[in-house]
Every structure is written in structure tokens, then in C-alpha cells.
Image (cartoon, rainbow, N blue to C red; front, side, top):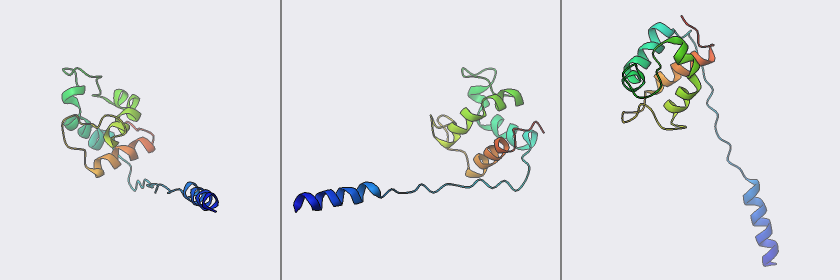
Length: 108
């Protein structure tokens, strides 16, 4: 009887999974590279990722677009949280970046 109780309990525990709530990205406006994304990168990233930094350079559209997946993982904390040594970016800035990527990384 103990074995049956244990087995049933184990089956119940392993069959219950907690669904991760997916965040739906809502992008009501077109994100502007020149007025929203570039200033965000310049203000928060180019100290280390600029021409005088020791890390890969991300100072223009082609470099930022080419590294968008890495940048996104960094600002979300999926890898080393960036900006290094600083505060995490505001959720609104992260959402702007994610929307820019979702909208096709436009050079606008």
C-alpha cells in the first residue's frame, strides 16, 4: 500500500508542471533607430563597446543590427547582464529594443 501511495504521489507531482507565463510583446508604434535605439546604445553601451572600448564595437546600425540577438540576451540577463557594472536598463528601453528587432531592425 505504501508503494502504491508513493507511486501515485510521484506521478501526480511529475505530471504537474508550472506553465511559464509568456510575455506578449506589444509594439504600438514604429521604433526609430536614430531617435530611440542609437541613443540608448550610445548612452549605455559605447563606453565599453565603442571605438575606445575593449569589447566588440556597436556604434552604428549595421553593427547593432548584426548583434541584436546578443544585445537582447544581455539586457534581459540571459547571459552576462549589461550594462556591466551598471543598473539594468529600464523595462521601457528593453521593450523598445525588442520591438525594434521584432519590426525588422529598421534603419530609420
